[in-house]
Image (cartoon, rainbow, N blue to C red):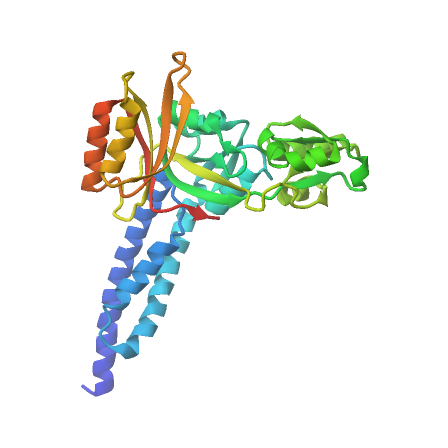
Length: 362
């Protein structure tokens, strides 16, 4: 056997083994896609990719091969993601609003392969997941300018769903009007209360009459259907494009850092990962002196940083409240388990709403 024949034999044997391992890897990718669909997790995870490339490149002993191996591995990862995207093509993501609303934009950014399902309100979107009509829901939980979205926090407390991820999207509000409208013709602006609040100074400055709508895209549709020059909507560029409106003025929101946090709600709780660094929980405390202070102390005593603590009325008893907490740290660790056990002793109700690696900007 010549050197060439021997080399080709090694290549053939290696290719055969690589084909077997490739099938095994793609079978695992299929399992990953099924998990992500069940838990409402997007395909792309760039932090995980970087970790794989860094770790696996160390498996190569020959320096001459390492760079090529990284390229080979990146291509393999891309094939795996492409396969997962195809498998998730039938995924359904509920959101509150209509096409062109910020929630619709967020849903399409987080889940580009899924079908975004418009719902009339937050509860309808939430219930679409509970009933199984949708795989997950993407709902706003907080705006950096206008605060919490109380209706969604209430759904999280009273409902059965879990949060599997939190994403930030910059909100840019624009003044939208039918073509041919000039700014001095506008007397009334229509939008969601959050958007009106974000643009309150602009509205006051121009003396506009604010009118509430279900969401920004519905407001844009109302203005387009009315065809009048004395009314305008506040909403996204996407809404203007969809409904054939003119961008009368751009970026009219007061804050240049206007961001909304969206949470993914799923029927299945995401398994805790060693990489998780954020967690969400909901709880009520016993009606006794110092109960809330004790609960807060327990979180700190176990080494977890409390990032936010918010109260909401339970609506079951007068002056009875539940608490929504966001914390930093791995709740799946031994310390996390010990913290949960101790909290259970000083809380009437305790629900771990979810945990995730970090908040992502989309």
